[in-house]
Image 1 (spheres, rainbow, N blue to C red):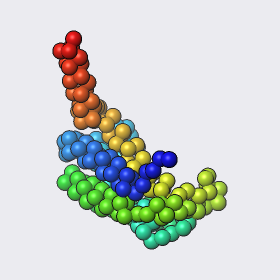
Image 2 (cartoon, one colour):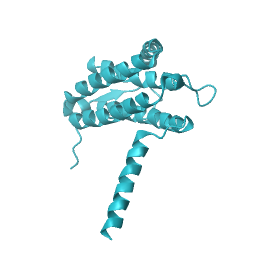
Image 3 (tube, rainbow, N blue to C red):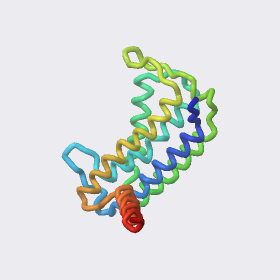
Length: 183
């Protein structure tokens, strides 16, 4: 049996957030207004979006809701957009990424398996009609990884090799050097 609990989810989220913060640190602030195409979020807007997104799932689940509806989600989206738009500098965005990430991960650690297994009802017509709290909370990390992948592509467009790529290339070079030395 595979066991992946709240502590594992928190640890994994912390790793994802640390990589997002490293990426945000490495992009120069003067590039935070860069948009890869018309109609897309800028670097800064994407990072601000990531920084505030985890606050709604934490609030929703902390309040013990057992269903979600469109008006509830629209209100949450409006509140998140307001928070996101208030983050206008690299320093503000980095502070929000750090504090929001720590707050969300610390909250996750305290959740019980029973709580994570509870089902949440979705509005009629949505598929699936229910999801567990576990699946909904795991999607916060998936959402961040989706946007971080976009930002890693943007880093390449800006002439920056992402730190994860640099680290992988360094490990690969070390292994090759060890193999050559051995023989």
